Length: 380
Image 1 (cartoon, rainbow, N blue to C red):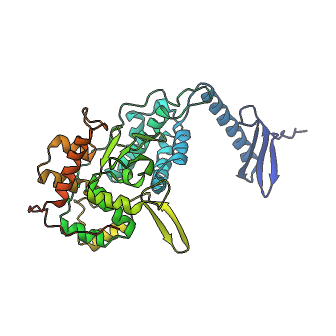
Image 2 (cartoon, rainbow, N blue to C red):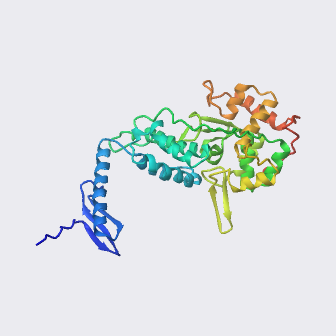
């Protein structure tokens, strides 16, 4: 007489599938309660065995202070500040998880990323897209090392790799397109009002896109007419070079700031969705659909070899400062470029000198192949 195979305890048939209800010392609350999604008992039992083994490995890693890239990637996605880029980050992570998701953070380096790179190159993915995904890897590792701590106060990663190598783009890099004054007028006219303000501010201060989007009133020093942007906000590197960012306002940028006062308690640049939702919401991204439509409407180049994003505004200011004779060291300060001698602490006279160059580039009418006459643009 054959013996009946003993069934594994911990499985319950409910709603047409097998569900797990089992005690486990490796589960966070002592119980595993989840659906297997399976209708076959044998397959459900194997699912349960694999799940217990997975929780055991995870518990062992946690007790040793180790974490996988999948854990870190999911946490990064939950905490990412720029929600407008969350969808892109999620796509990159889902592709990366198949290659490095189960590796411990200490095992992530150029060598372990090579299979992912070869696979994406085989799919003929653009080098820029691969590099964007590698940038997400760097961001996750940096945050694991600098921000996240376990219950014992240990960092998730003791030290991030010095550098994750990028893929070489065999094609020509896109060239920046500094705007002349007439092109700037056409572009601003084609933009919605809140983006008009942001563009005028950016092209007169040299701020980066996220420095403008995340600009807060608490950073404004009204007595000096400057903003001092901290290098780190909620463990997210806001300023590219990791230093405080001094933002000096000329008269155009100052009019923009004055016109924004009282609209939002925290953020400088906000917008309303319409009459049905009059609440002011922060702008998370300048290089959006409205910008792209305005760029085309303004008759600006759409050639793939030319940059079409908002970073052109920073190049525009740099070109104009150079055209009026602004020294290199001063341009570095005004554009927020890294320099060992740069500090956010300046005397009143030094601030006025910096402001003077910004006024000069705005007022001076320069005749060059790319810089032409400006007509006044009303703000507010």
